[in-house]
Image 1 (cartoon, rainbow, N blue to C red):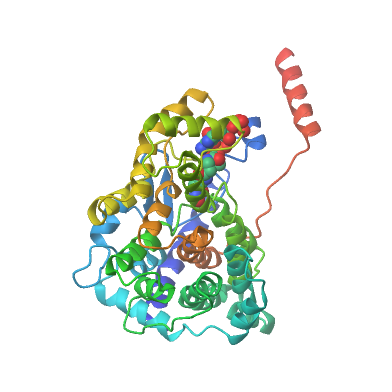
Image 2: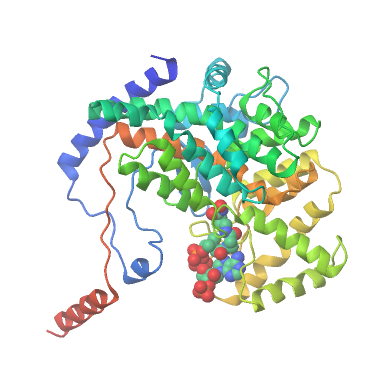
Length: 442
Ligand code: HAX
């Protein structure tokens, strides 16, 4: 058994026992109440799921196993002389709750290299898709096409003991993470670079090798950006649409390939991960409309008001949980301050930070007028020459896979059941109200 799996097994067995005892003792304790607004309003804030890998606070933002992004940048292992964390280290942290040593993070990177071979039919399948197929469609389909390799599905068919589900889930998750950068880079190169593919470089760490295969630039700062990008997008607790979808599909014991592909379909929505493409599309639209890449505050204000008056949202702003500027946005801003001088799109992104929130606040209905992670990422990618914004959500997806797969291994280890919440008709809600009102009168 490999070192990470062994560590996981020890932790998982202990938590399984602890949770079962806790449930036996306290299973009937009420921890939440549900309002009609929550039932109609996308289940905001309803406590309904166990998710071990990260936790989101509305004001402090995301914490991965208790660590903020600022702490991750300090504590996670880095390459020699590098400033940004290795995403391999974050996966280790999410899976077993410990900051890995440099040796452990390197071991994980090497393990992924051994598992990195993508089945040939995945490339054949991608090549058969029309070239203008959206990269997220290609990504989700490519993940699904690799399901032929699922160890979980194979062992289930052979009659696996439910106590061993997590083991097969772990193997599939490790294989998927090893292969996703190659698959994603293949999609990028076939869609935007005439199908001129770049072989992996076994000397590089996971994030840097991905950057290398994308082949956007020789600038080593892009490797640093990729390491940071892949770290900060990995997880955002369990309730966001991509995580929750992966979790839901996994709860049916569909294997990680089915689950992750489904999660990526959720990420492809413009209110979720596709917002990173929408932000740059919107900013480029503004630059074109105004005929300048150095618009004044008044010009930007007019453009925002025009967007709102057309019944559209301002992409990259707002959040279902956060109630302050997203620390993932701030981490990218700090990166830009550190690495980038005078970039017109980055400058617009920073101007928007001052202009958008008061305008959204004045609408009187937006609960969080501050920027989210997607408000900044595209400007950094544009700076290094990745102008193909249709691909941005795939980058997000490669990172998000780490969080949702680590959480999936935990779900199987903790014996999480089939997810099946209760739905109501509008009439049923009316009847609940009537009953409650007549009880009060009585
Ligand atoms: N621009 C304009 N209006 C906005 C808005 C924005 N950025 N954010 C919220 N609103 C509006 C909502 O559309 C809603 O209007 P209606 O009542 O007319 O339907 C109202 O304000 C209340 O919404 P809310 O409660 O503040 O926000 P929700 O929890 O319903 O939605 C969203 C959260 C992220 C979907 C929302 O803020 C939004 O659409 N933002 C723009 C898209 C975006 O950036 N998405 C990425 C989010 C982060 C993420 O998942 N990244 O992957």
